[in-house]
Amino acid sequence: MPALDAPELYYLANFRKALDWLDAHHRELMDEAEQAFIASFIQLPLPAQALLVRLVMRKGVHFRASKLRYAEIGDIATAAAPLLAQGWLIDDAALTFDELGALLLKDELAAHFAADLPGGALKKSELLEHLRELHVEPRSLADWCPRLEDRLLSLAIGPLCDRLRLMFFGNLAQDWSEFVLADLGIFRYEQVPITPGSRGFRSRQDVDHYLHLRACRDAFDAGMAVTEVLQLLGDFSTDNPHIGERHQRLLLRLAQQLERAGELESALALYRDTAALGS
Image (cartoon, rainbow, N blue to C red; front, side, top):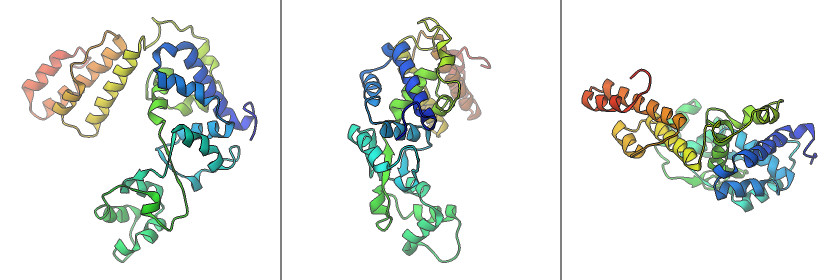
């Protein structure tokens, strides 16, 4: 395994600088689990650290071990062992059929579910559509595909890393890779003095409020009815202008949806509750 300052581990070195920056500037915003993660992470063997950062930067939470090939990390099972012991990775988690389908190639689907498929050549999307109706209960990878010689590793620490990412960037639109893979590194952030009045989050409650608004927005984007989103939102209030603007923008989107649906009185009530531009 290369040393931390080796060029191959630039992404890990940058991630650790990000954690150091958070610990120095935002420690009072972090809960015990987040503080414990930072303290424990730097104590792990370098292969385990590198593997976790690689997985955090990848899309999704489920990964086939056979698809994880990183020369600088070496044996994936060895690197994963400390992460499994910490509970940051899960071994052989249950998968929905859609999650399984995202992990398998078309030929693998056809081979492992041959008995359930009609004849003829089908696209992968057609295979998935046909099989989805037959398989509704989550199962482990081994149960889904007994003949598949592979191991499933699932990221359990993702939500915590998302919270750290939020505190680092001030939003969830930016990905860890934007910093971890950058050549400039942490120094462009250290050049700006950080004070309680200059940053977006002034308290842990601000962080929690941001995440709550994000959850409500995601639920609306996923198709939840406006009335249900409002119930999820609850009696929300904040004295943080940055969070307040996000709250107002969400109310505006909900009001616009009600207006499109012809529920004009309810829409007007929401418009009155928001000072967002365009209302």
